[in-house]
Image (cartoon, rainbow over all chains, first blue to last red):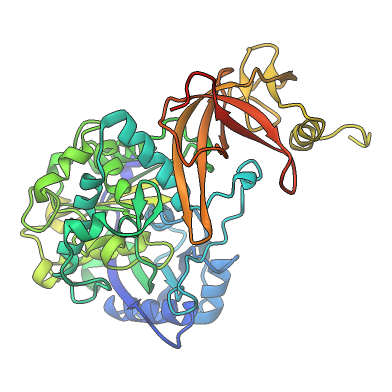
Length: 384
Length: 124
C-alpha cells in the first residue's frame, strides 16, 4: 500500500463539538461523550456501530480505554498515540489506514477537556526534562518565547507582526458565535498586554477553555450513504525531530517543512489549490512559523506576510476561520478543532464566517514545544 | 551492569557537577560533542568519553519569565564545542542574542547547575 493509495479512501461523515468555552459542572469525559454521541448522530449511525477508537487527551493515561468504557463500545481497533495537539491529524491518517486495511468500518476520533472550569490553567501530563529543570522553564510558553526571540533576531520579525496574527484571529472569532473570545481588539491593546515570557504577552497566548470534539470516519464508498456532504481524507504527513526545545535543530524552522510536503504529495495537490489553512496557533509565532514552513511564504517572511490583514477576514488567504486557539477555543490540545472547522467550511455550514467555494482545507497540528508536526488535507467530493 | 561504580550518563554528569567540573561527552570515533548526556550520538557513535568544557559560549535565544514575584531569564546557549544547552544568565535581566558568555557552576540551589555570565569585553 503506497501512501498515495490512501487519497480519498476515507471520509468524515459525522462531526460535533461540545462545551466550547466554559462548561460548568461537566467533566472532561462527559464533554467528550457529548461530542461523540452527537457526531455519531450526525453520521446517521448508532453508537454501537463504532468499531475503532482514536483518542488522546490531557488527562487520561489510557485514553482509548477510558473512551471505550464510558461510551460502552467494543472496538476491534484502537490507537491512543499521543503527540500532543497534533495527535488528531495523525489519527486521521491512522484511521484511514485501519479502514482501508479492513480492520474496522466506523472510526471515532475524539477529544475532551474541562480545563478552564476545572482550574483555568493548562492541564498537561507532560513530564519535566531533567536537563531543563534547573532553569525553571514554564513550558510551553518558555519554549515558544525562545523560538520567537530567535525568529526576531534572525529575520527582523516584530511584536507588531505578532499582534497582526492575534488581530486576524479575533477578526474571524467575531464572525463565529461559538468563539470564546469575541469583541473589539486593537493593536495597542495587544501590544500593551502583560508581558509573560519575552517577547510574548498574554495576547500572544492561546486561550484556556473547555471543549470537546469528535469526528466519525468510514471508507469513502460508504460515506455518501451516511452524509449528504462527506468530507474526504485527501492526504496526511507527519514529522518529528525533538521533544525538548533545546534539541530543536533550528529554532526558526519546524518539522512542518517536511510534514506539509508529505501531505500535499499524498493529496496530489499544490499549496495554491488550498482554499483554507487551519494552522495550530498556540502562540502568535506559530502561525508565522507554519505559514513559512508549509510554503505559503519564504522562510523569514512570515511576519511581513501577516501584515495588513492578509490572513484576517477579507484577506488574501483564509487562515484559522474559527478564530483559532487564540480567540475561539483551546482546551489543552486543539488539533481536533482544526479538523472540525475544516469540516464546517467544506460542508458550507460555517455561517457568517463561511468562505466562498471551500473545497480543499489544510489542517496543521503542532504538538509539544514545536515538536510533533502533523498535516492533514481534507476535501469535498469535487476534489476527488 | 551490576557493578555499582558504573553509572549512566545523566548520573555521571551530575556527579561531575557536584565535584565542580562541567563535563560533556565526545565520541572518540567521530569527534561529535553531545549534550544533554546520553548513550549515543545522533550518528550512532557510542564510544563516548567525558571532556572538560572550555566555558566559552554564545547566546542563541533568550526569554524572560515574568513572574509576580520577580523575573528570571531562560536561555539557549551554544557552547564553543558545538553543543546547545538550556541555562540562565543570573546576573542580567536579559542580553542580546549573539552575546559572548562564560560558564560557571552555581551552587546556590538544591543542586549544582551550570549558569553563564557575560564574557569580559562583551558587557552588553
